[in-house]
Image 1 (cartoon, helix red, strand yellow):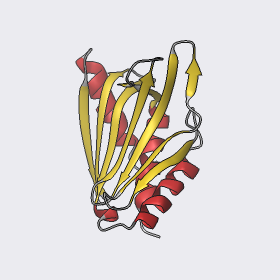
Image 2 (cartoon, rainbow, N blue to C red):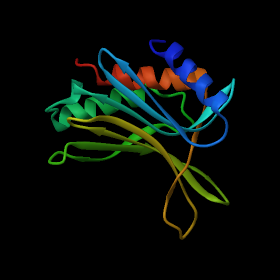
Image 3 (cartoon, helix red, strand yellow):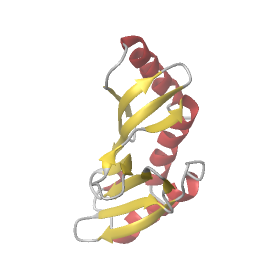
Length: 161
């Protein structure tokens, strides 16, 4: 795992800092990983948003965005729900993927959302929606190891062919 050590160091810092929302960034040769965390302990964390900023997608075509999204979906089969493309806006340069199908129970549905953006990178989030209500951001709960794997998979998926 390429950045697992750095992620663990940041989660240790957040765990020691106590309750509340925290953010960290990790610079690599290929870009910058930004992570918003609402909770962390020695085993896992609650991630509000994970963002990979890279120039690997500069001037990417819609086909390149689709390929990047598919590579990520293929790699990230360990998530609670599989990811599938929902829409690709070639003009705006954004591929949106979501859980397919989302998790559902009596309280509503929960799903991952991933935006692969030309000239920007990848944004990974989780949402919850109650029946008849607008969706709300929801934390994605991961072990530390799974968060490191997720970050590595996002990074690897954006590398050129």
